[in-house]
Length: 64
Image 1 (tube, rainbow, N blue to C red):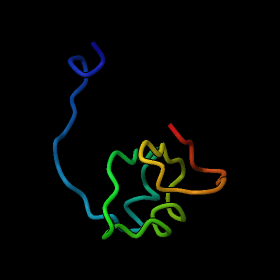
Image 2 (spheres, rainbow, N blue to C red):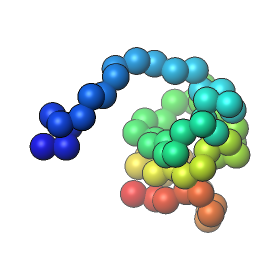
Image 3 (cartoon, rainbow, N blue to C red):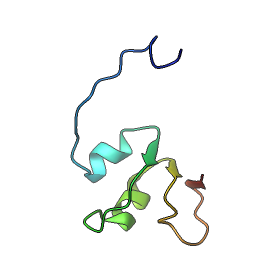
Image 4 (cartoon, one colour):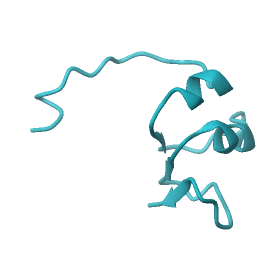
């Protein structure tokens, strides 16, 4: 399967603009009040929002 054939690293990263902008994709899997949702959206190339945290339409947000 996909996960078994790839080498995924299990580590945390700080949600900072330079970290987000260096990634091709951000997947929102949980909604925490302490996350700066605007900063995440403004600095991410593409976001898959599985929690519905972004209301409205944004060019880089896909609602899943």
